[in-house]
Length: 256
Image (cartoon, rainbow, N blue to C red):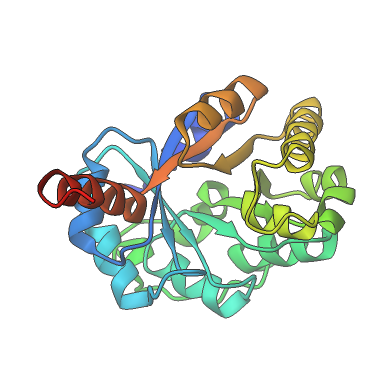
C-alpha cells in the first residue's frame, strides 16, 4: 500500500516556523514546476482571481510532486463543493476567502472533514488516497488537512479572535487589498490606516497562538511583516515576476 502523506506546511506553522511562499496565478503547470524547485515552503494555487479550474489544478499538483513547496489551493469561494473537489485531487491545505464570522469559519472547516466531524463527501478512489492505495486514508485524512481562513474586511477584524478560536482553523490570512478597500482605501494597502490594522491583527493573532499570513510583492514590506510576527508570508507572484522581468528586458532594448 502507498504511504499516507503528512502535511509539512501544517506541521511547520504549528511549530511556529516561518514559511515563505509565492502566489501562482498563471494557471500553468510548467510555471508551478519551475517555482516549486526554487526553495519556497509553499505555493498558492489561486482560483479566486485566476482562471484555474480543477483539471488545471490537478496538473499543477502533479508538477509540484518533486519540489520543496507544499501546495495551498484557494477555492473561488467558501463553498463545500469547490472545497471537496480540491481535496479529492490531493490538496491538503486550503485558503478559504472572505471569511467574516464564526459561522463561516465553521462551515469552511466542516467542508474539509469527513462525517461525523464535517460534511466532506466520501470517495474511495480519488487522487487524494492515491486512487484507493493509501491504507486508512478516510480515518487519517482529517488530521492532515490545513484550513487557512482569509480575513479581509472590517467586520471580520471585529470578530478576529472568535474566528481564530474555531476548532479546525489552522491559520488566519490577512488579505491586504480587500482589507484596504473595506477600510476606505481601495488600491492602497500601504495606507497608514491599513498598515496599522494589519499590525494590530497579527499582534492579536499571535497573542492567542494563531499563525498569521499575508501577501506582498514588496521586499521591504515582506521583511516588516515578518518582523511583526506574520508566520506564512507570500513574497511575490508568478505574474509579478514575469511582468517585472519582461518589462525590464524590453526596456534594455527599447528605452522610452
